[in-house]
Image 1 (cartoon, one colour):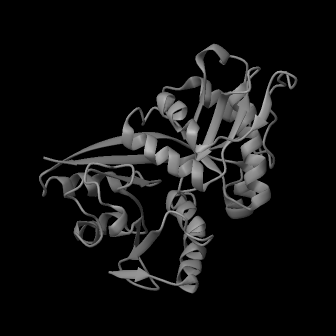
Image 2: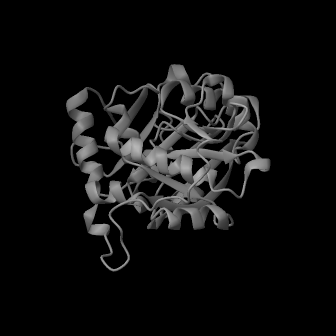
Length: 295
């Protein structure tokens, strides 16, 4: 196991992961922001260097003080050889399987490895699999080989117009974490609210303020650079507000040079239609998360 330290190694890792898109997307996005100051204090581990097979990005041990906090105890994994990475993932120095944790990856092929590993440990693992989208501006810069010239637009589609006298584009503050937490599919508890607060303090967020000056639709970014936790108050749905928020977010992230991508659940037809309307490109790989709980 090698802990990659210093800007030179992390920049080499980012460059290498870029060549493996889109399967490396979740890890690439994380390392990209590690190279912009590493605001979440993460570390990157590889099985060997420089010709690594598997990379795991995780928090520093001193950050993982709550054994029940899987929002903090999150690992991003990419492997060039998923069938032969089990030994590396088994190491307690790489993953602390005694904690409640989650593993995120754009590689469905890791599922067999993780399930095999789970069979050797006193843990229960649940997998969540969703559609993965990358924004056209990001594809054009990072992975032009993914372009389908017959169906691809090099720019995001525009959302339908909204009443700009009624709604104003703004950003969220940490005090809005409870609001986001209430409507987040993976949230709804104290630990998720702390995670949301940290994202709000660390990364750009976007929202629309309603007639009374309060957020009515919003979207955030997490430590992997993914656009996440979007939501709209029930009484304001059906007006295309969240598509306006996400469109504005993608444009701003593109100006900052950030890669932009997102996921939607396979049952959420509304968000899938929004993604297609905005010309977000469905990836050939999927968004995966494995939640592990010690027994």
